[in-house]
Length: 320
Image 1 (cartoon, rainbow, N blue to C red):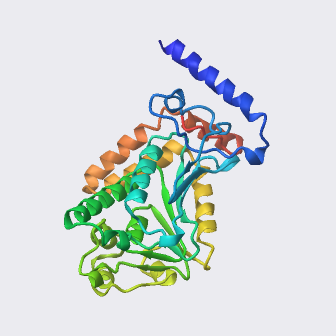
Image 2: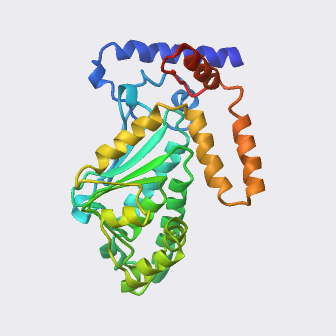
Image 3: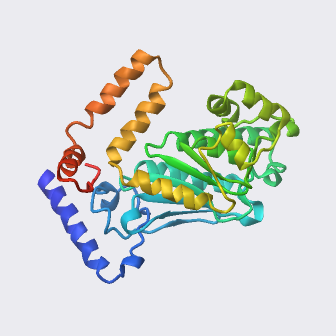
């Protein structure tokens, strides 16, 4: 049975290689597979990450692309709802859940960038115009789904980077808080305005913000609903980087490229060790670190890293 499956995988890979000859290198932009869970493509995601030509995910409000050539391990999720400044409605929320679920099962992915195609906004939060039409029960269901969707983002096994230019308010900032890293433009506007609307941050903001910037600073921002810019976000460690306005995506891409050059399995284990270890006592965290380290000992990438170091060359990692 194993031999038969390997034969199928090899045949499929050869077909893809033949197809790639009809494209120039600039046209070989790889995208996430849109095939269903029963397809051979999804079952054999370990195939050559530099030659796959897959379909992008494009909807009315988001776009997901896999970058090309040496950057093919980088995914970019672009928020694209200009008429609402990327405000999250029911349709967009469904699309985000679908995409996060697929990314977590995509072995070809090493890093995820979240950016915006709208120059003035990263994400303005929940779509309040749509919310006006909801009943209290529908609002509760929406917020619960939003909270669980952002938890899906936070729990992705690969590093995530939010590139924030323009407004990141309410749910928009809460989404950014779920990312591992945040890059802000100087003119970015960040805030949790919920108390001014007689509610509180309901998609994780009241929990993730104090864990990131401290309880007192988080209370200041949430109680006053005050908005801050990129420089202020950097000073209070809400942002990892602050760059000139309009350059957040470029800086995020630069960071993603650095991560993409590292061993994929090691990056995933490092994220797991940090995230899960942060939730437990030190002794338990050290045991978790040992377990994550042990899982890397027999990988091909570890041997490649040692060989590359000895031969003074750049390693070629395959995620195996």
